[in-house]
Length: 228
Length: 199
Image (cartoon, rainbow over all chains, first blue to last red; front, side, top):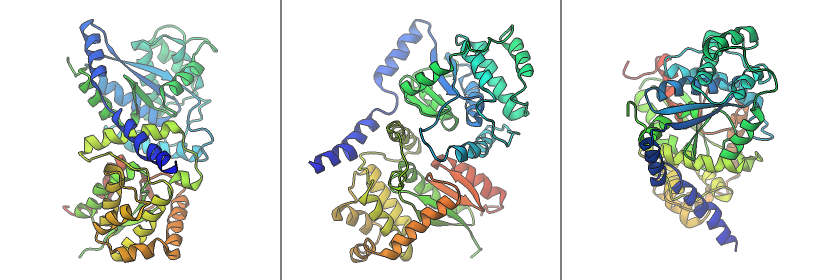
């Protein structure tokens, strides 16, 4: 019995999981059907505005999705990470160093070297999640992240970001309590990711900050090439 | 021969990302004045750290995509968690004494992650050890060797001493690089330190 159980958990289970990795024919066909009807592909990005790795993902994906018929849907969350993770604080500190190195690969210089508490940027997550996904809202999220991590703007400066919202999205930001952060957090768990930044694309998900080129490659394999 | 600087290489036989890192890590001394200090560590779940099911699933899928990109085989696998991982760690220390750790890491991780070799069995362990150039008699002694067990515990303590837990992890001049896909960032640091052999 133990032998069978061992084979199932150590060999057969992993074999099935590995076989499910990557782009398969049904996904390619679904993408082709969408293209035929003039539709656009969606990349959902679960991210956190206090998270420097999410900033890497937002800025990097914006660049890599340019000139593709692909919509970047920004779904901000606040609570994330493995339950009971004893290293959560250390990971948060290390993420600043890691994100700075990853951004440098794209020629971007992060200037902030201190962590941000999730509560500090929760209002930004509220604003973004209160609106239906739209290019302007996505652009706001990208620019806000860039300003926080590259320009060093104080993330607690609500007035500054309200002006930015007005400039990019238009009008005053949504009022408190109108956001759908809890819904995004629940959707993230349903899709599989347990931490940010996570990009979901046709049933696959990636830790987006370290898989930017792999996401672009997957879009190529699905037929969503640059200029196509 | 010019002096070299050490890169501590924290490695787990149970980590598919560690497997992906092996060829590139041991290629570093070809380009930089460095030496690789192998430090095999006990898998996270065997150190009492909870790992969610979704993390395990994601790791296998992600590793498959990364392996394809690197041109490395991945699958069929045989998860070595438990006795298999521990036996490899002990033989890894024996391989260090014999100067064959590179060969053993390549052979064992390839066996586990692309040939479904069950290293908890004598047959499996013998296969990966002998093709790395290790003698079976020595390997049999190694898995009973308490001093090797202490060395493995020391490796875990060293990783924790860096306030770290995950693998593969590289430590160069107290700077930590975590992940097989961070070797490129490590190389940036090596170049900045003037260790590029072609300079």
